[in-house]
Length: 365
Image (cartoon, rainbow, N blue to C red; front, side, top):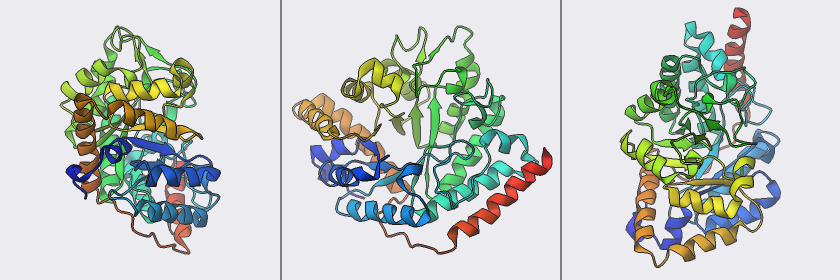
């Protein structure tokens, strides 16, 4: 892995951004972001490919582009199972986290997360925005709902660590989310900015426990949610609060892993700040990687960041700390841009295992 001393400022700034594709017509623009701006990774969505063959072609195209850089790319997915399923349709879908944990007499969380890790490895992904470490407090269809393992934070902790370790087994970077606990609110941060009233200190007593235990079990990447906490984040979302990130994540949890934002183009953040302002706020707050779905013209945002920091030693020192964390993770998980072979019957291989788990759950209902 390339050493930070050999990187230009532009290369270091680029490592602090992950871009979502979301539109196949933008692939040429993403290629420019990879080659010119040296972004750290690309997040793919289900609509970026219609089947496994298209996914394989897209992943190998990105890896080929990334091979022109000193540092290999994260190729990321948001693959939880249940209603958050980003795999192509020729792969069957695994049950939600809540269903798996509810029928876990046969260690279904372990089996399902092992299948997921191996499936992502074989299809060329190397980072997964999972497990969800939020606690289920509301109906299955709410923002978190059945995406959480349980109403019991101890079960969430146990299942989350099993899931996290199975991702690691296949060199898939697990991203624990959504710190400090999206389960504490019914509102969905994709559409509105939730405010959590933590007057009963439930976050400290319950919601933060799974994250704390995951950190103790060597969690390497954490996603911070767009969640405002009354009397704690001082009116800002946690993802944009410098004092919150420094006090709660870095100091209190002694966490020196990578911190990534939730997508700053989520409606709540976009309406509140606009993309340009939210990008600056996320950068200044102390996030190591800023995630956003690509839109034409985003290159200008990265140019402005580069120009803003180039003569500021304090900001450059902050960038260096973030990039060291990112490089450490890429080295640990052996991230590389090698070609991923197309395996003719790969979906069938996984579908048989997935169907076995689905049938076990159906048999319990």
